[in-house]
Image (cartoon, rainbow, N blue to C red; front, side):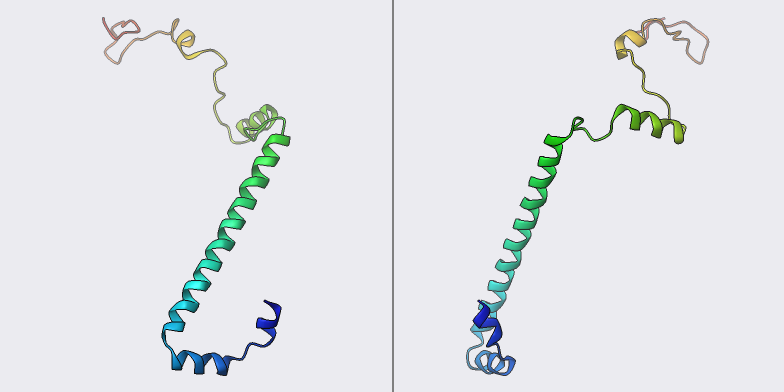
Length: 108
C-alpha cells in the first residue's frame, strides 16, 4: 500500500482512465467500500468504548441522584414523586371544574 501511494502519478491515472473508462467506476466502488469499512470500524470502536465506560460506571444510566437533584434545583424543575403512582393518587381530591366530587374511576 505504501509503495502504491509513493509511486502514485496523477497523469498516469488520467491516461489509464481515458484508455478504459470502466476503471473509473471500479475506483469509485473501491473508494466507497473503503470509506464504508472505515465508518463501520469507527462506529464499532465508539460503541465498544461507550459500552466499556458504562460497565465501569457505578450508575450506568448516566447521572447520579446528586446530579439530578442539583439540576432540578438549578433549573427550578419539579421533583419527581417518591411514591408509587397508584399510591399517590389514592388520597387526592378529585374535584372537577364543575365542583362535583369524583372517585378515581371518574364516576360521580
